[in-house]
Length: 347
Ligand SMILES: C[S@@+](CC[C@H](N)C(=O)[O-])C[C@H]1O[C@@H](n2cnc3c(N)ncnc32)[C@H](O)[C@@H]1O
Image 1 (cartoon, rainbow, N blue to C red):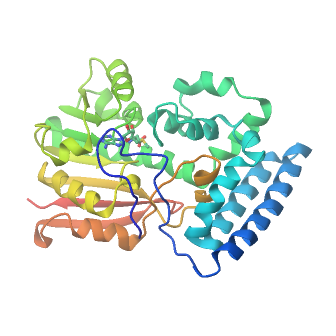
Image 2 (image 1 turned 90 degrees about the vertical axis):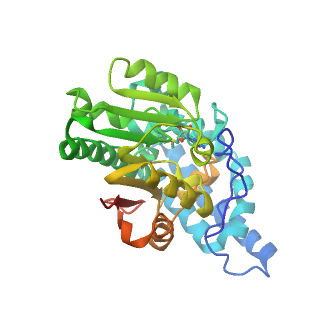
Image 3 (image 1 turned 45 degrees about the vertical axis):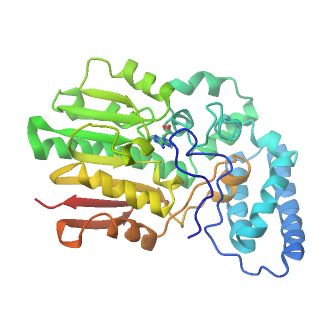
């Protein structure tokens, strides 16, 4: 897996310029020819897709077809050609049409200055916080949105939120009233909305750490008076051990490792393992290399992610702690678009 070019610094960890060349280029020698062929294929695909959108029938299927075709083009031509095709797709008149979808538009425009902010994920969650933004869309934009948020990636993201809620509630059931949880890169902590353990006051604390002050403000307002403790902090500060936040029964990171190089991911995992109590669990999630929406996301949404295979996940998990001190698993979500690793620290 190739590594992205940006460095870790809390403020600019997630950048639109991150590279997605974590998939092979079949042939480097005839790149100009391949690019011309890829452009021609894209022209055919987009022309068919635009005709289907203009016809106004079965728009859900039309967008699904386009997303599938972009995935195929990305796979077929490989990283080098795909990287050069992205700006061509973004400059095509179809971009203005597809960016009428509020989710696609938000991702492309990046109002918070970086990719994958918590409000973007709120579109996937269908959260009321973005209802006004959705309501401002054109009818065509809403039709496109109907498919984009029900594509395999977003379906997997909603499952991920539910898995996090389940892990927190199961941890509370296992550890009793002293349960301490840490969410790294918490976003808006939407998984807390459905947590029974939180609602019933069975958590000692749920620390929610994020680099974005707007996300921290949102958590502070929504969960005021509960055991949720928002902290404006960064992965960088965690790695430098600047946050003295104690130890936890459960630590998790979702929507973060997709932007971290292996080196940083392994270091962060080691630090999180150190912050676990004996018997505690660390969970991290990553988009898998089987994800289906990558071509659409990287082009029309300008949202690049580092996809990881099972072997990539194991490499990080295996680097987390000495072998005989942990129990590790790697597993896929239901539609295999997101992959998880859980590491239990043995007592
Ligand atoms: C895709 S969102 C995921 C939010 C949430 N965990 C979820 O699953 O819905 C990514 C979050 O990571 C945060 N983030 C990115 N880089 C970070 C860093 N270096 N330190 C702390 N938070 C970071 C962003 O501010 C954003 O809220």
